[in-house]
Image 1: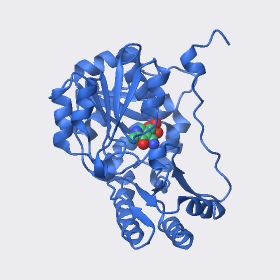
Image 2 (image 1 turned 45 degrees about the vertical axis):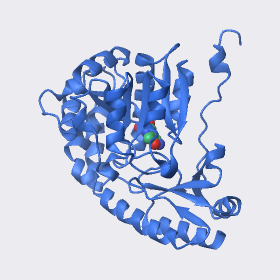
Image 3 (image 1 turned 135 degrees about the vertical axis):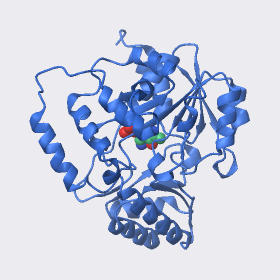
Length: 349
Ligand code: PMP
């Protein structure tokens, strides 16, 4: 396979474990609740009207204005601050195509979301991980010392669940010469954001997704919010029509009804806090406080726990990295799913 680039040949294709029948799926930070019936009905009506044989308007202006309004920009010209993609994964790739590549360095505090590393490797960008400090604190001076071109910070962090200090993130933005990407995939759960800084700092962009709080992982949609100049540059690497007409129209309806869709957030946050308290009572398990829809848990005997969960068809996230060998991450599910998980864990430890 001489024609394939060496750096691609070295990689392994991203694998997602298959979903088995009747499984309790608590591994991928999805919202366990389906869309409200009212919105499902609206979707069916929209789908019946779409002209699939035609190319659609690729400027997505209405949708960008609606997302802009949701982000707190002025409604009529916020289109210049928003870029939409097929999930945040595609947007991370766009950012790396535009600002990464040979001779450029990404720095990322780890543990972190694995796609930053994978997409850096795909785009030939050198990737430097810096370990989080004790209690998962942000090692900001170590990050600055790398002198990277691009910095990824997840807020709240995945998989640890905590929000780093806002002051330290601000220092990274002001004291580095890097493009700083703050990934707010779990923003709706934490309620904390750096959105009001994007107009002040031209090296900051915010990345968000519809896959989590919005219950829309299957449609593949996310967005970048940033200053007009950086968005103008990023648009050059966006493929025309990258957001299908189906997604464009469904997302317009979603943004007009975002409150209705986000009603499950409160319920999931309350369920997370209840699960956290119950986990604290289990000897041999140490849960870490979380501002997102998942909890990282350190276990004294990870092998027997994961084996027991597997036997009971409960899927959680385990990690390959040696640093996280004794940890698992559980996504907050429905009350029944959380109870099944908790009971299983109690029996297994
Ligand atoms: N960022 C973070 C921090 C994530 O955890 C995930 C998914 N787990 C993503 C981005 C990707 O989300 P999407 O479905 O929008 O590609």
